[in-house]
Length: 555
Image 1 (cartoon, helix red, strand yellow):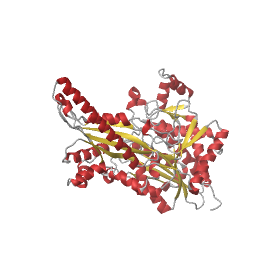
Image 2 (cartoon, rainbow, N blue to C red):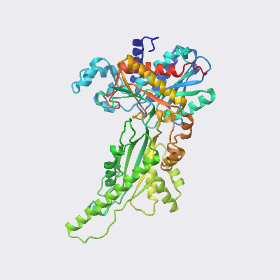
Image 3 (tube, one colour):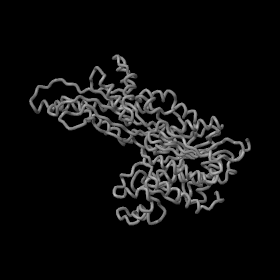
Image 4 (cartoon, rainbow, N blue to C red):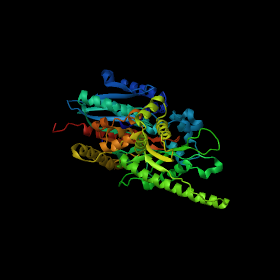
């Protein structure tokens, strides 16, 4: 183990950084994201290395960002001429604080929250954890300001000892991770610039996003060698409105979205079966009809979208799977209406007659093709909608595009349109192929083996970080054909969410996650476990970094 610094001093240092960062509320979409970037830049500039080399700390404004948010970078140049580079990266934003209720004023005050939880009788385990002194509470304490603090402590350590490095370290702190990932997306250009202008050779990127036990009593600490992908799968359902007094004459779109929700939401049968990896089912993030006020007309349309975690499947695979389910759901809804209508005519003594409740299912690409055959200039229409709605919430804008297109459909028939909307997170992972990836895997294995032998820790190495992270945007595994399928089913990709997939593929940085450890991320009981997070994690990263940036005989 590294022993040239006092470990107690290290733990106190990481704790102090974490406490300071938590006290700066940086809720996604607020000015706090700018404030915390300034705070991190100030901390970096206080280190003696950067006092002597002020140009080695800089910021990158996010293009067109209304809040003025920015990425923060710092660079430590090691000895010698090697350009091998390890990236320390983390995100600086958090989710909101309304879940704290009456404790909302204390959401960024770890000491006040600790005092509360020490006396909290509603959850004995949390009370005991608070009383132990081993846990820190507060919004972002776990996700992931403690992760930022770990990197800051290690930047301080290596900046005081650059002779330990045969290569460079790049520190990168990004905003906007909790929804659009626009911080790390913007950083792709900066990382490419550094590679071109400075000749840097990126060995690996280390994220410190949080980890948690997978089940009660789980003894393992997880190290991830890649990132799960994400697709936001959206359903737009257009039915046939009617008066509630003649309800079976219509086709209620909420019945279709309800059936889709039943079939898809948290359905483990829809997960990818990848041995040894965490398999998370799709989950609904939005479901509502489009009525703006009360009346006795049934809804005209309904909207539903799902978070879909992706391990190895391509966007084309996911689209095909969901279209099949939608077709089955439409057939069952049609059957249900037919059965209810037959009962309705029978119990009321009416003459049975033929009606149709057929609903066609289209992918967005298929629906655009249908409209083009009717003579609709789809590209001109969608571009006009985007230009007419600056600042509209991105998913709402995608639904607006589909709704306007549907109104131009001369058939006027009930339909379901399936499409993708922001954000899109690419999936990537180390395959262990080639000398570079083998070297990364060997270092991880060797360091963890040493720690397992000398410390009371048990580790497991997995491929896919399961909680979504900025690491997705540092490497890309989807092929050009698969990306083209994604773009074709994503309304106005280039204007709404232009992920620079070609640049990400060119960047191709292997990304691992050595995360801080805790419980209840995104909950008001969020807390980070200090002994592992503030001591073990930074020391693991130090050892790995030195291994990757040590002098090599072949060089």
